[in-house]
Image (cartoon, rainbow over the protein chains, first blue to last red):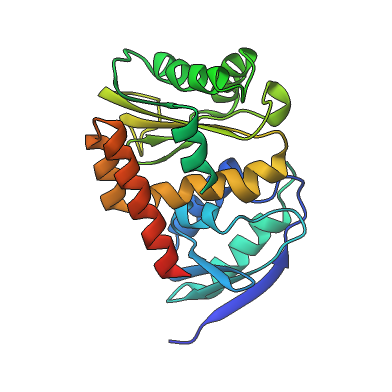
Length: 88
Length: 158
């Protein structure tokens, strides 16, 4: 199994706080691939809101979304789009 | 952990609370924030309004709610309150209802909320065994013991 990743900057004002964080996790859960969210040396299972909120993602943070599995390309593309399109 | 210090030093906790509705459960939590000087009374209405506007998205895991509102809606400083319920109540979140642990949070600005308050809250709630113990906690000593376990786990991680 290969792995796909992409790095994206969080630009919306409040970052990946509880509400967009929950939406992000729900989107990640739609994919079968394992998805990991990384910020510097911290990483979280992107399908767990508790883990995602614990790494604390704010405006200006550079994050990497990494997926491995049968739908890894779609997962990375959908999740990076989600981050890019956050407006709150 | 700031959460532990705040909750224990301000007695911002209540165990086995009798709440008939999610509104009463939230009120129990926000009242503790107000009593501790972390939020104004209007913060309660703001928390209810957020739920009306966006739904109960802050029911983040089975049985666990983390009610909060925007910093400008009456938050005075960083604060936490921990309430467990005698009987679980419905918040209207089909994935994670019913709720019996209510952790209310507030912070003076959104960066504090995201970068320290929520991270502390998740540190407490990320381990299933700890959450089970919280549900069973009946005394201040039980809480102290739980916080000590959380601290030990995080030392191991780092």
